[in-house]
Image 1 (cartoon, each protein chain N blue to C red):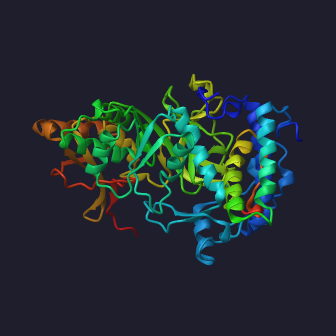
Image 2: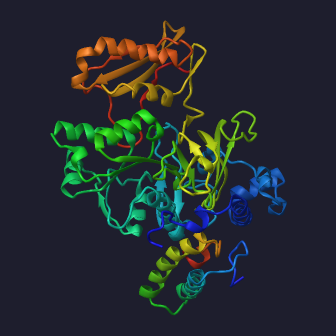
Image 3: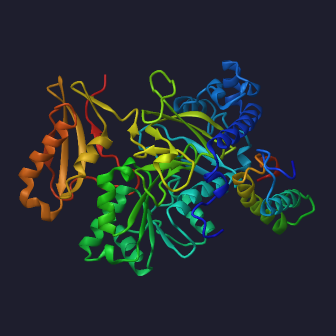
Length: 68
Length: 444
């Protein structure tokens, strides 16, 4: 479902880029080797980008296991 | 897209059938989450014999057991501090808040995680953007920033939008009025009651509020923001458009807002909530245009899954076509109409504080008022409305009181209201939610 939203619509360019960034941030926010300044800011950024992927129904998931 | 009238055009203008698909998708995911992580919901689901797989269409929402405030309070009492609703460890929370306590009951304690707190601001963004708040605005919050959640989310919403935010914390009313004018605030956020209080203060200070830069007044926290007479009074006294919003601590944010078209109702944020309207006695759904109790399911705060929560709010849903703004989201006609538990039965007649306020506020000379319910000779229930008049209204006081009593009776099946003049400054003033009804009857 990387190329479609939760209702099966094809992604726009903006949506694709938003989703890619979200997935990259999720990985970065949970890297065990990231220093606090990276880890905490990545988590904060992820909590913001979650809003966009949720609003656009690209993803609907909880992030508590990632500490967010 | 920054000139879009919609915060999220994709869902705000989505065809309703697609909106239902989206709600069903989110509902299934939320039920799975709640069943897996929240002991409270797991227990309730098992007791009701409910499984997520039973959700074939949105109509199956009725299979999900409802939750109530007493259940939540009981859960907190049995396992302090937060009960067993939590779906995530408290150590992951970044915010702690309480319900306002205006109902006199034990406040509910809520926790939010990092993304929940961002979501709370996000829901406010839908409303503020729809009412025209933009980066160039300067937004003043007449709010005490305590444990009550109130306008906290709206503050962070404005930071997100890029507005200049003025937080007034523990300022006096006088200093707030001064800062609004000195800083050139364009938007002011307060409860309707406190917005009237600030306007009164400005008059006493000789400050011309309608001549200030304020062009948007955004209110929340009381049903009065959607009472036409109150809205008109606020708009005249501030020289600004007044937009209503409503939310609750249990969801952490707002679920309804007025757009700039202001068709007499508030849009429901339908991609983040399922709002049902049910007959409070039979719990059967009521149709468009029929008053009933709000029951909310929230897709936002995962920390405390909220599924079919009985709010006690009285509302009347109307179709989105009542508004011409282009949103496909239905509205609550007249906003929040009252609460199922604030109705008073006086000698066989139902009296709602909001209905009394709607009539009292038709009298522009009234500055403040209070409703007192009492029992005469331990037998007969009486209702008294005490009013304080503005100085300029004092001359015609007798005629005004008589007319007010007549109008109140006419709207309540001829029920006699005692109307009394209260000395200037004697009635309580409020910053947060006003509590203008005192029931002095001794309960059995």
